[in-house]
Image (cartoon, rainbow, N blue to C red; front, side, top):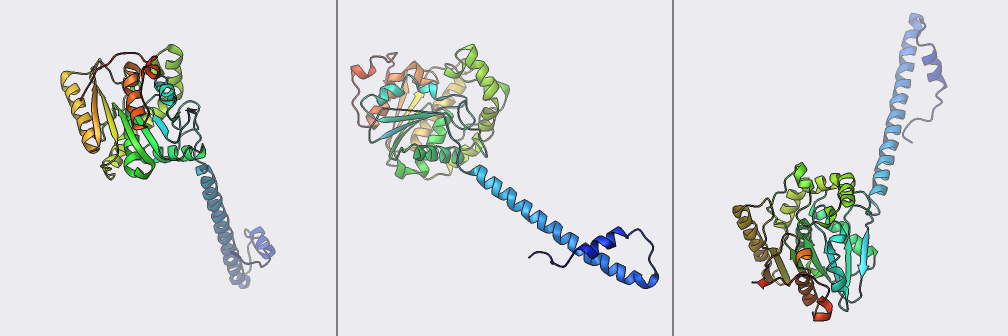
Length: 327
């Protein structure tokens, strides 16, 4: 026991009469009684504090388990699972023109909303690559989707998929980066950064716009704040020289881009491709940042080829655009 089991009644009597004057001959005994009671009081206080700390630790442990649940969409079947990771401020709908065509007679496909986005559990902890990838891996296991995976990441989601591929190469059979964020690219933390880029499905109509502003502003800010840490995590990750990789980069400048920033963006895509020695770099002519919307057939073809599936006219007939590809 943490404290003595001796009866506390003498203490109660001493405290009750603590304001009364006592004879000198009893002063020593009273002081001794006060000391005994004080020790008991402090012992009880420490016991309560310890129990409180244990309770808080236990509550925190329970909050950390299980990991957050996510809104997701699974389509198709096959031995390989294709995992789609959306960019900053985007939901799984950003893959709506691509996922069905990849799933068609090819592979099992999985798209989802990260924690903090509509339909998924609130986010806790850091929003860096390490935490987001671990949450994704837990969700895949929870849904019975086992490796190998072909990872497809757009924009900031591409940065997360780079981390996934470089830290868990035994779980990855292919990687497609769709105008991916570079590990050394700093995202601006300002109101303008909360607006998704040209062509974003999340901002395509007023209702979606309001939904983003109301529900996603906080999580977008969190992801921007931790994007530099995510970049460092990717930079410090081991290389995977033999991983089949396709790097898709845009060629159409966004409205706010200048020739200088456009050239810098192109160099970053070259550097991303260089980080994956087995990669093929495809510059998609006429496509903006959202290649999966501007030229969905290019993304579909890249994924299906990595999955070992044929791409034919029947598969691609619903795709829009005739974008050219140049190495």
